[in-house]
Image 1 (cartoon, rainbow, N blue to C red):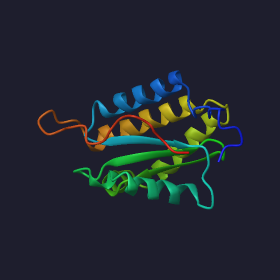
Image 2 (image 1 turned 90 degrees about the vertical axis):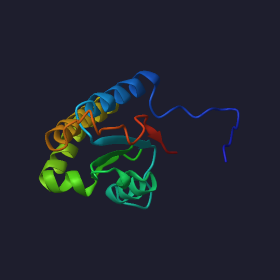
Image 3 (image 1 turned 60 degrees about the horizontal axis):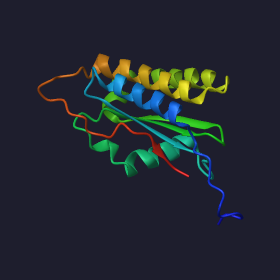
Image 4 (image 1 turned 180 degrees about the horizontal axis):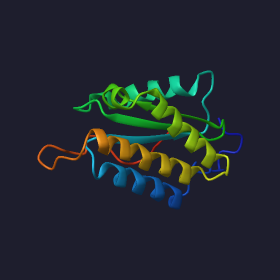
Amino acid sequence: MKLFPWQKNKPLLDEEENRLIVKAIRQAEKRTSGEVRVYVESRCRFMDAIDRAAELFFSLQMEKTDDRNAVLVYVALKDHQLAVFADEGIYKKTGPDYWNNVVKEMLSTFNKQDYAKGIAECVIQIGEALTAHFPYDSDTDKNELPDQIVFGK
């Protein structure tokens, strides 16, 4: 319950940041059958970020892609937590070191307080891995998941 109900909550990302990330998602998915989603919320309480990302991945039904090649980028802005959760199809092809490096690179951009840029760069990097292992096929490829950012509380 809000103390002052007439006050509006500030959005987690402004319109320009939102556009930057959605553009990165579309760019990343342009050359692959893989799917990338971004989930942003303010807090990740009582749970490790990777566990929260896994929970969200399955609640968003991202495991239902044909090739099991979906990836969720999860960020809790106020708690300064993040995780990348990849489905088994792409995870098996890249291995854990790849995903650890993706997170490290995103953290280095986050340390400069440029969250939208960090998320967008991470999405593009994931798109490159997806393209290498799951290239676009015009006969069979379809956009299986929405490109918009999912916002939590």
